[in-house]
Length: 245
Length: 293
Image (cartoon, rainbow over all chains, first blue to last red; front, side, top):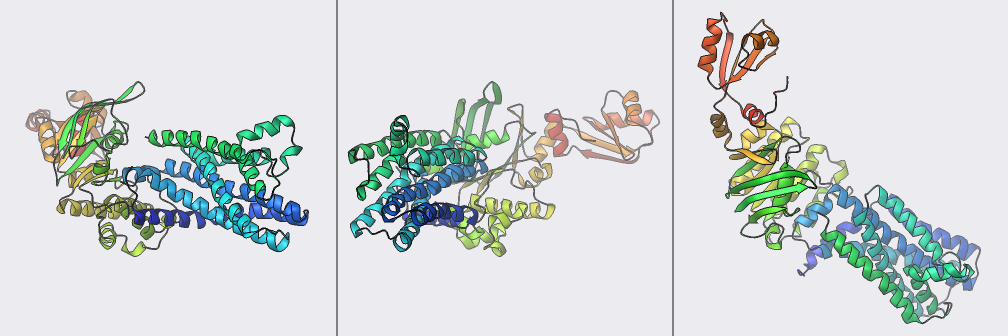
């Protein structure tokens, strides 16, 4: 692989961040949506324990959106309007383009994590040790990756018009079926098993294990679940990217 | 510098390119002319390595198009080129310049492309002509040895188009090689040292605009007439007549022969003019298209 020049990666990342964060119509809903949900269900209707439980689930829910949309919708748009073609004609390695987009999604995750955490501490009375907060932040960053990959697969596969609808079609049901909105144990058994196919379920369980509210399955199984989701998505994305022409 | 041999390309069952052969030398402007759907953009995409030919070879600087080494020496302006709407001209140029080891100085790129006064304008706020100029600026920002321009002056007004021509000539004077496709005959005539006329997937003629005209040995005769097109075609069916605004126009290989026929038939041929066939007429003849009324 061709070595990535740091200056170029910096420029690429900076431009992607500027481009996304200047789209107010995208930034506000992406940030406000999980915060509003948490304020309603975690603060107004919850207590300290549900506040912690829902904080973790809404962090997962919050980071999914920007990752799916920045890759799914923006890549589809850039592919269709020719920007991706211009970039492919330059000597810039493809990995740089993807790393810049990942960096933007990670920045979004950081903002969402910070806002939800501030709300949780100040309004829901959530308390955690520094180590737990750090693990939760690491989880927010980790949770971004599988959805970046899924978004990338969609962005490289569908048109710019179809991608937003399809992302929504996946984003909301996945959130629901992973137990991010309602505890997974309230679901019929079949749906509980179906959740094992979803990375957001595994991420939620990893997060809940930080405060001992998970279902008690081996953590390694959840990490494996996330990995097994990332691998085929990455494979499909690489194949799609290489066959773009 | 660039060699194409026996190039074939098809989309499904449709053969778009059928045995293209040519080579280009450094420091010249080459034009690919053809009607819509004749494969001009496909040819550019093949030369850029965006498509893989079904048959044949393309070599740029002795390498396959699309290789990393070639990418560092090639710039391209494609027909599609939507840039991020909310990034400014300067931001877009900075990011593309960062992809290259030895890019052109940004001040120079801005001056050459005439964008000095639009540095802080987002792409979405640029006019059509300025958008084209920014795409052109991106094509040259890497300081390429060869620049591919697919319809560079599309959607530009006359002034902007002529500015673009001057810029392309300036690049040539710097020793760059330019390969462009265009619909505009006057653009091809004004800019290109050598033209390739593409028809039904084949190069049907090549050479400078003058050489192509000579190759065709066609002249255009025009004179004032009170007769209709139908009447002239009936009287002189050997030639294809057109009458516009009271002027009869006809293309022929031997003007003296036609004129003697006309004089013998009693035509006075007022305001007579005999000109060598223009590139447009040559093009239309070669691609078997009819002149628009």
